[in-house]
Length: 114
Length: 114
DNA sequence: CGGCATCCCTTATGATACTG
DNA sequence: CAGTATCATAAGGGATGCCG
Image (cartoon, rainbow over all chains, first blue to last red; front, side, top):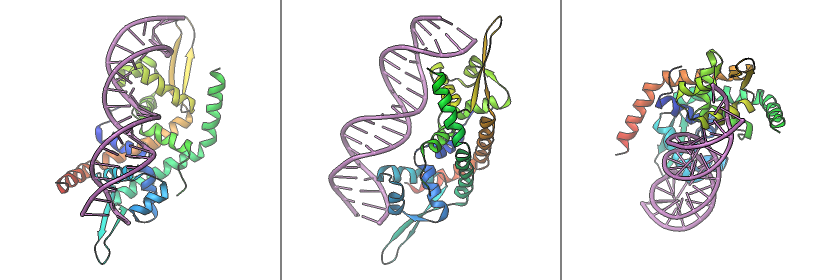
């Protein structure tokens, strides 16, 4: 197989790290405010900022500001983000379908390890 | 969205961490020996062992030993592993399709950040 | 509200040497 | 060949306080 180049690994990273996937899934239904995301998934401000920056940098989400009486900022998936999210969805659903299989396998593995 | 339970995160972990995905992709075409994998992807023995153990524990790969004149051990994908691998394939191909988009996005992001 | 900065801890990964 | 053991470093993540 061809090696995993940087971009590939970064994309896999967006899927595999602690928060990116969760944030994207949260934005799948609708755009949300910073504090809204923060409360929804119990992420610390630091990690949320880092996560949002990385996702925005890679064009997966967009930061939308609306300035009026009370300036607002919201985050939404881009088209690219949405299409990645759908693959993410298959991954989540794969996990759920194989949940029992995995648990069983772990039990057997642990039993064999004695 | 429903929170990411442990198993879900572990599965995403198999995709996102440094080596699991690479090892699985390597096994997609055929089963391989320990040393073969090692040389193919330049992983250290320690990380390879850890990676193989986790994948085997979760039932994604199987450790096949054949003892005869010269005992051998090989690793192969299980059915579950193969089905996860196919999603992994979509992810890789998504990365490739969006490679340019991502690079552009990063350039614009960096330019805006000045 | 929407962040950024600092400190600190945990986990992931790497280098290397050694063993059945 | 197929690992294990030990040590060291890097990256990821959390707690907390401050700011425009």
